[in-house]
Amino acid sequence: MAEDLFAAAAEDRLVRQAPLAARLRPTTLDDVVGQEHLLGPGRPLRSLIQADRLSSVILWGPPGTGKTTVAQLIARTTSKAFEQLSAVTATVKDVREVAARAEDRLGQRGQGTILFLDEVHRFNKAQQDALLPSVESGLLVLIGATTENPYFEVNPPLLSRSTLFRLEPLSVEAVTKLVRRGLEAEGAGIDEEALALLVERANGDGRHVLTSLEVAVALAHEHPDVERDTSGAIVDERIRVGVDDVEAALGTKALRYGRDDHYDVISAFIKSIRGSDPDAGLYWLARMLEAGEDARFIARRLVILASEDIGMADSLSLVVADAAARAVEFVGLPEAQLNLAHAVVHLASAPKSNRVTVAIGRARSDVRERASGEVPLHLRDAHYKGAKSLGHGKGYDYPHDDPSGRVDQKYRPDGLEGRVYYEPSSHGAEDRVRQRMEQRSRGRDDADSQGSEEAQQ
Image (cartoon, rainbow, N blue to C red; front, side):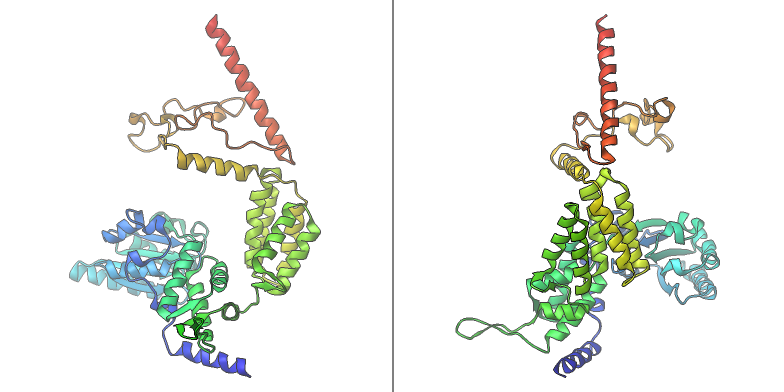
């Protein structure tokens, strides 16, 4: 009964105020959390917004990554009129009415119009075609937002007239920053364990984490935990969000599995598969599923493991892991447990190699620690007008013109030609890769030796 009263009180508190995500929506570009590759200083989308020179764009990214936020920031900064439609409810008639109003504005005041179309992928071909003339003529500047791949869901003519910007899931650092902003707005504190769980379960979705935090804070208000020092004096009167509050907000008891905690169980799961023990992998999978663990979290870890611990030893493992992850989204639990189990058995029984992991680590180390050399002229893009006059592409040997299908030529900047990043193992399919690479290396050595002898003669 007490828990029901707490839940009712928390619900009443949430109803009486605007959602936290709405209250924290950025009002300037500097307030945006994440998407630095697009909105950081000097980055392309930021520059276009600040200069009010935006042409039609498609914003593609997962939920909660800032697509609507970017559109609303554009509305705040542009001198153009801003109209908004949702493809879920809008019709061709609505689009034509927006175009008519845009034409009136342009004729009477010389003012352009921006149309923000949320969920643009929900428009069918006929609806998208209705947009095309206005976008093509420049009457409407389209900002389309979509969570689906626009190459599949947006008509090619419309996509070709728009610049595509891809928004990435928020990083752990970005989500943590967002949570701390939310706590400040709510006047609450949080336990580190609770913060870690909340950030982990965000899945890079800023809106989801703020919604969950708001519910957790509302629950925490019903059992305030005032912090006192050894003398009994109050040190911190703020509401403090604990693990129980976050678990309740997320609707799952996912952090603790018996005496073990969330991180120990997932660690045991990964290490069992890496150690090629399918039964142990299945046991830890079952334990997580019974505890209510997020199946998407499990699937993501399997996709990572497929490249991190198996890699080229069995490239099919990445396909299997990715298919399991897609099944989790498409089928859902409980049936998707079969797909996850399938992936666990395949990955655990596959040959193992971490050489891909080592290789990218070496390459990134060189990028960070060594001077960034110029792209060799023969590798530069030679397709645009004037490129050849700059020497771009000159001397490039097309591998498909060679009977062997490969050409030994300079493929890296100066000073990096001899650096070796990828060294294949002798495990599974990677052994065949190793043999091919060794054969090619011997062929290069023989050619170099022959060239040296001819030079001496």
